[in-house]
Length: 235
Image 1 (cartoon, one colour):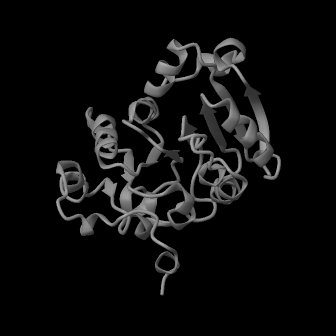
Image 2 (cartoon, rainbow, N blue to C red):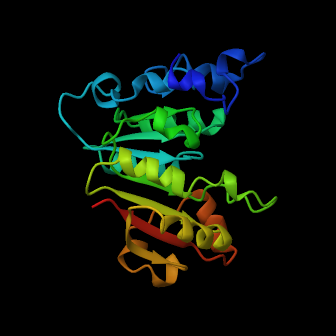
């Protein structure tokens, strides 16, 4: 029995949907070569470059956890065509929106998975990936359920092992409670903090200048909410 089969299934299986909508159907038809359901995604572990992107060299492979509607994902993919980008998203509509936006101009350097971030280690081998982006994830403050937060020491330690030296992890959130909680979690990892701030738009300097404003982020900023930001590096 595989490691995946030994773990409890965190999401429903696409093949078990009684009435799959158009987005669920597109996952296994229109975008089958670049969009992977929860059963097919783990089969790419250790083989994303060779099998998915048909790459014969060692181009960087980045990951975005929680792509939402894919605005940052598409921006990043088209900005850096010399890198590969794999996204994780659970909901079908934003998942398909993400891959469509990224590939609308013909770029084929992206892939998307319907997969839970807590099982990220089932998707990637040690030293397989490079940079990781986590932007405005669910803060799990109402109801208060910190155990469901993606940026925790266990997941961070898994990601650290998957990343190659010199890679970074970028995390930003509108939730001050989540951010301060995550700082304590980060202290228990091997990451080096390159930069952190409680107000990216006021104190971010070059990090603010390089920042891509996500859809959620734009709403928060218009409401006067400060954006918390941290960049971690694996030396």
